[in-house]
Image (cartoon, rainbow, N blue to C red):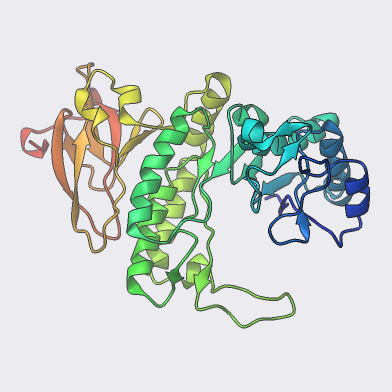
Amino acid sequence: MNVMVSIWPHVDEKSENFVFMEMTGLLTHSANGRALPTNDGNLYIPDQFNPATRQFIWDKIKTNYFNYGIKIYWLDADEPERSRPGLQWWYGRHDDEIAMVWAREHQRTIWDGIRQEQEDDIITLSRQAWIGSHRLNAAVWSGDIDSSWEELLKQIKVAQNVALSGIYWWTTDIGGYRHADLLDDEFQELLVRWFQFGAFCPLFRLHGERYPPLPDNECGFSGGHNEVWLFKYSTQIVHIIQLRESLRDYIEYHLNISSRNGTPILRPMFYDFNYDSETYKSEDQYMFGTDYLVAPVYTYLATSRSVYLPKFNEQNFIWQHYYTKEIYPGGQYYNIPTTLNDFPLFVKIASHHFDILTYYIKI
């Protein structure tokens, strides 16, 4: 287990670093060259296109975190949040030209800094990415999304599109981030279904602002509890966590492939079955590595969902339901029953491993 700290990109004008950064041109500036505050008025965004800025910030991170053994960094709000489109200049270039690339250069701060320390084990968790971010070992999560069934379906689709963009380390806030009521039975069920999806994402993580909030304490404001053992369906969630843990070697194997040639572990079905035209139509299910087909449930009180199982070019492969162990031929749609204890999860298996009886095959 390793400690990760969250580093936000803003510099407060009350910071001990502000005057130096302003005087030496390390902050985002306006057309006249003056440091440009955010709309809040007292925060400033570092000019991460400037190599001197990146080095200055890394030196601070190294002194205060890295030297104490903290080497994993959560780069929150790195769009950057509170930016002022159209007014910003970075290292002499206008916002319209390079704004979207800011996050990648922010990630480069950590990448270059840790490499300076002769270390190769690098990962950052970032709320934004750009072309090339994967080369800096940036993992991306999808931001402060709503806690809703509609958003869960969006995330299933987003995950596949991000994978095809070349970002193979991706994750989502399990349960969503906003508008989550712990007293609502529907949200408690949403958590279970989101955990089932999250267990088959490259990174598996729980995060979100829950309500009602806990009382303020000496550390300030806190949202509601977010501990697995306090959720209504904690037993089901623990089983999902155990399933994820059982796949540790499988996931590591496929992420090593991603590192070598870019093949994402989470990918649309047509990536593996491009000869099957139906796989291009099924956006709400996907492959997780070569062996698992995942069809998350994204509706409230669902007792079944439709699943398409691709056909195999090879004659000796079939699909097996992970939970029921029932066998299904490929190339067909099925209505798969589900409870909160399971979901449509299928494993690609070699048919010669089983003595398959005719009555056991789903047709």
